[in-house]
Image (cartoon, rainbow, N blue to C red):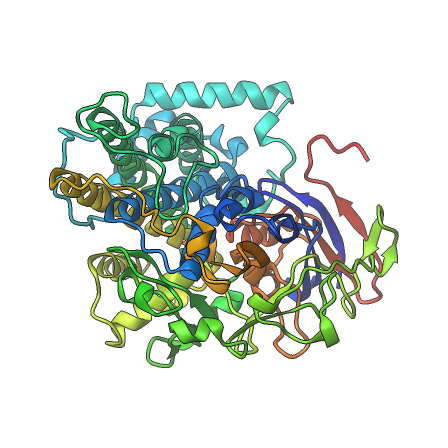
Amino acid sequence: MKRVVVDPVTRIEGHLRVEIKVDEASGKVQDALSSGTAWRGIELVVKDRDPRDAWAFVQRICGVCTTAHALSSLRAVEDALSIEIPKNANYIRNIMAATQNVHDHLVHFYHLHALDWVSPVEALKADPAATAALQNTVLEKYQLPVTGPQDFNFDAYPKDFPKATSTYFAAVRDKVKKIVESGQLGIFAGHYWDHPDYTVLPPEVHLMAVAHYLNMLDRQREIVVPHVVFGGKNPHPHYIVGGMPCSISMNDMNAPVNSERLALVDQSVSMALDLVNYFYLPDILAIGDIFVKNGFVDGGGLAKERVMGFGDFPDEPYSGIANGDFHKKLLLRCNGVVENFGKGIESASYFDLEAKDFSDPAVINEGVEHSWYSYPENKNLHPWDGVTNPQFTGPKEGDKTDWKYLDEEGKYSWIKTPKWRGKMTEVGPLARYIIIYTKVKRGIIQPTWAEKMIVDQIEAVSKVLNLPPEVWLPTTVGRTATRALEAQVFANMNKYFLDKLIANIKNGDTATANLDKWEPESWPKESKGVGLHEAPRGALSHWVVIKDGKIANYQAVVPTTWNACPRDDQAGHGAYEACMMDTKVKIADKPLEVLRGVRSFDPCIACSTHLYNASGKEVSVVNTDPYFKG
C-alpha cells in the first residue's frame, strides 16, 4: 500500500480533494474519499428575495455551465406559480440548453480532458505525412452517419473540416516543438508526460489531437452565438420568469430577434454540428478504440450498479413539473433509474421516476453525515425541507489552512450526500445513455427521434469496438465517449428546435413571454416548485419554497452533488469515489489513471488526490500546479 498526494488536480473547475488507498502490487484502489473544499452558500443569498430574480443569482453558482442553473431555477419558480411559457420561449430555451451542452462537452474534451489521453511531447515524434493520411482514415472509419430531422438546411458544404495536409501538421509539430524546447510549456505544463499510458497511442494520433486542441481554442467561442442572440450575452445570458426577454420581429432590423440574427444562429448551429461530426466524435472514437483494445475498460464504478436521470427537452410547452405534464412532453425520457447495467441489458433493472416521486422524501433526500453541515437530529431531508447550516470540523490532522488527512470517520466535505431511495447513484451523459438504451431495448418506451439516435449510436460504437454496451459503456472511456455522442444528439436537437422556432414565427406567432402571473398579487400565499434539467454534467434540480411573495427556502442539488458526494455509512460510496476504486494505477507517484477517471465526469470542482500505505504514512507529494513553488 502506498500514499501519494496530488494537489491540485488541474483542468477542472472549482475545489475538490480526494484521498485514495492503493495496493501497489495490484494497482487496485482500496478506498477513496471525495471532498468538496469550498462552501457554495448561494442558497442563503437568495433567501427572502423576489423569486423572479432567483435565476440571476443562482446562475452564478457556476461560470462554466452558465445557463443550466438559470433554466432549472426558472422551471422551479414557474412550477411553483403554475406558469406555462409560450411556444417560442420553449424552443429558444431548448436551443440555449442544447447549445450549452454541445459547447461544454467539446470544451471539456479538448481543453480539459484530452491531455489525459494525448501528449504534446509524443506528438513531436509524429510524421506529418503519416498524420495527414491518418486524418483521412479517421474520418472514413469513425464518422457516425446518424442525424436528426432537418426542415431547413442552408449549408452548401461543410464549412468546418479538419485539415489533412502534411504541411499543416508539420507547422503544428514545429510550433509545439518550440514550446517544449523553450521549457515554458504554458498550457502543457505540470503533467506526467513520461507516463507509459502516453505510448498507447501512435505519435500521429497525438499530433492530430493536439492540432485539433488548438483548432477548438478558436472555434469554441462561436458555438455560443445563440446565447448572445437570444440571451444578450455569454456567459450568464438573460432570461425572464414566464419565458424569454427577447422580442421577435421580422420587420424591425433593430429587434433582438429578426431574420438577420436568426441567420447568425443558424450558422452557429451548423458550425457546431460540423465540429462534432468531423472533429470531436471521430477523435474520441479513434482514441477510445485504441485504449479499449489495449484493455482500458476500468473506471466504471457506480455506473455499473446504478444510474439516474430526470429527463429533459420538452418538445412543446408544459403546464408544470409537479403535475406530471413535463415528463409527458420530453424528447429525452431518461427519467428513471437503472441498476446492474454492468451485468447486461437483460439483467438490468429499471425503476421509473414520476412526478409524485420528486415530492416524496423517501425517494429523494439529502444527508450530511460526512458533510460539513448540520441537519436537525441528523436526519435525511427532502430538498424542500433542506437547510444550509455550515458546521466545519476541519481535517483529522492539520489545521484549517494546512490539511494533512481528512476524517473519513467524521465530516470531510462541503458537498452533501443525496440519495435515491437510500442509495447512491451516478448521473451524467453516461447515465442518460444507459437509461434510454435500457428503456428502448426492453420495450419500455417507443423512441423519439432523439432516443432512436442514441440507440443507433451505441450499437454503432459497439460494432467498432467489437464489445457489447455493458462492457464498454460503464468505463472511463465510455463516460468520455458518451459526451461526444451526446454532443452529436444535441447539435441535431439545436437544428430541430431552430426549425420549429422558424416555422412558428412564419405562422405569425411572435410571443416570447407569458406575463399573466408576473405580479405577486396573482400568486398563492405559499407554494413549492421543482425545476429539473439534464445539464452537461447530469441530472440537476432546483427546489424553491415561496411564501408571501418571497423565497422562504431554496436548495440546488447539482450533478456534482450526486457524483462527488462523500460516502454514506449505509449507502456506500458516491460516483467519484467508486470510479477511483474501480481504477488501476501503474505508478503511484504519477496516478494519471485516477486523474483521467475523475476528469471523465467533467468536475465542477478542483481536487487533490491522496494515496495511503498500510500504516497511513505519506510517502510523496506530487503538485500538478505549474505555479506551485512549495
